[in-house]
Image (cartoon, rainbow, N blue to C red; front, side, top):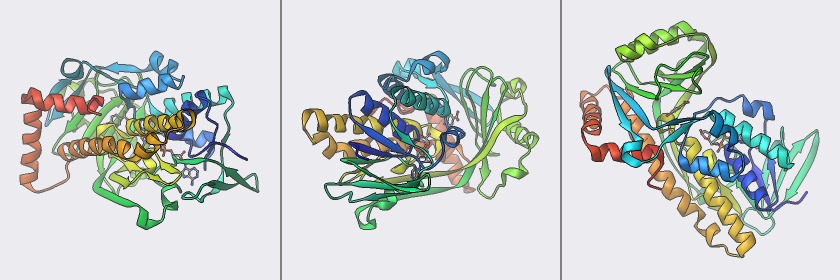
Length: 388
Ligand code: APR
Ligand code: PHB
């Protein structure tokens, strides 16, 4: 098989890139390790920036998002039982949308199926060849047979555990990493959200987040230790741990119910540099991870894809490699700003250090955030994704 761009991974990065390239006449094939059902079974974050919304519209898959997504013009931060609001609208004129990543993935899959672009699911032993040469190839096993795709470029959109980043010689890549000693225990339930807006909670018992997927479906998280076993978290225990972290009003309004999904995610910051190696480009989680506190994971994936699809379009249509040559620097400039913001939110809102000095600094950071318009504007700009 021959194509122009071979895309590894059918997560949001790979699917969005594929859709944009296809729309502009650039041939691509996606090779995915899992089945489509498995990809759609993963529950991930749900806050998207305007830039991401625009890109989904550009890819022609934004209709359901506009219909079902919830526009949020602010966010609430609760510190030791007292709630504060930060207005994105007043401070930046912008807003974000709450729309689950699982739904975005489904919209992208449906969009791809509608235009008949090829995706190979359940592809095993995917391997990348000759990325620094002129004839890169991707090989894999599917239906008990060996297959090969010849291509011009490979887009490594295969997430943190994917094969693309690992295919690069170690001396060509630098990894920057920070692992936090905590996790998030998340619970999805068919209950109305406790508030119209997301509430990020800093409490001496640990962080909590009240989020939502719709007016009838809620997503909650509580900080937990990495040693936790999900089996030892019956729903009742989750609700009992959440309640004391909330303010009084939220506690009274909280509607509990059986979980639809429950999972534990570790918190990590990771950046691989550069993001281009010959004819291989990394995009999304394959190149970087942010802790979920800043809601940046999906938005960063979309921003990589934005730079990458335009660079590839320039290559094929304008016969210019300027975009390709600048891809890594441009993408990383934005990545590091989102890394900083996600790290800052994580360090400020979680119970990480027992050192009373660190706790005092957290409280001073938050007090400053609520009292200073300049600090609140910086926060709002970062949350809605403005400074990129
Ligand atoms: N071969 C083929 N496919 C692979 C391989 C491999 N060796 N390894 C992983 N994959 C697939 C995974 O099964 C997955 O479907 O690549 C896909 C990567 O998808 P994601 O992990 O979702 O990464 P990405 O598309 O970059 O999405 C960005 O946004 O909210 C954040 O972190 C969250 O997933 C999220 C991200
Ligand atoms: C979510 O709704 O899953 C969510 C929202 C905001 C975050 C992280 C996760 O920062």
